[in-house]
Length: 129
Length: 267
Image (cartoon, rainbow over all chains, first blue to last red; front, side):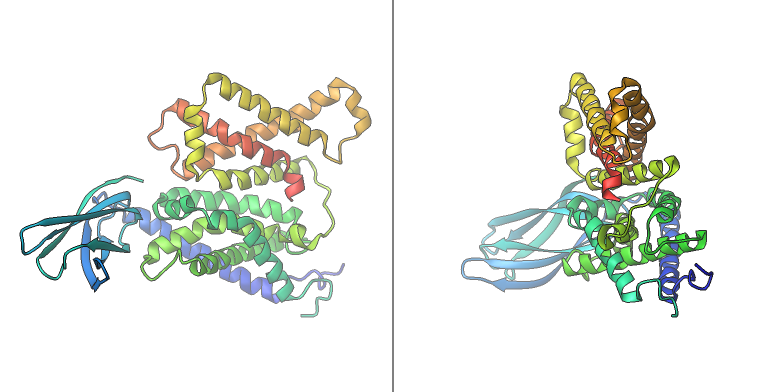
């Protein structure tokens, strides 16, 4: 087989170059992530997106964000609705995992209208992955 | 391109994508792998990729997209495999709804880098898996590279799961001893069933012993080392006692050892 027949095809060189770029960017990204890593605890915030009325309940769609550097698993969150009649209604759930600087969209169901009364959220606990 | 002895680009890319899917899908559709992709220590992931590069080059010198002749060809094959493994992982995770607009760019990139390791191995092995091209004649060094590759593949499939740790907790001392013995017996059976072994020589115990030392026990040691590496890279050794780490590695060495012994069939 002559050297010309053995030549690496152009497509392999181009795709290989893409692979090299991806790996280099990957190494830079991972190094940067390691260097800039801080031991800050998770900071969980909640923002209400929509409130939808169903046949027998109200659905509150919420975006949960972890502003901290620590990623979490099994994050327990709770929503508490203090209605006009001073009755307290709670709804809670578990988020499988919430990495650093990431968001998850979740929903809470309530019997009472959350638009009437005070609705508060809090993170109850988590596991370190 | 004036290279009539090689398949056209679309066939090469198609084969590599198919290989990446065959090897990558079990991990792309495993929840633990998504989570670990988010939480993995960046240095450990980087070390895994660094370690994979020379190993993949060794694999490429045995198989690959074409009958490579030079080190440059092998390196290009590995880079192509990583590119296709990365892109294939991205498309699959996007289609499955794992990567969404809510997924942060950092976690997406980490997850794809982790997933691209097994997917790139699949892409690299695509020729022998899909095209059915002829088998190679491997020397002992190549046999060891194939063994490490086989054990790495099966260890990658199982190391992310909780079951490996749970099983190691449930097993007592005698269970572990029995598992190691069983692993060695199964590995020796694979070794003896290798077509390169002359059946006539197996009537002598000395041949059995030589094969055991040369392939089975060496393969087990490699599988154990690969298991320890994978458990460490994936954070499964963090906070565990030395006993638990060794037990977990021995449990993982069961599939990894079979992967090492059966690697010739996989490759």
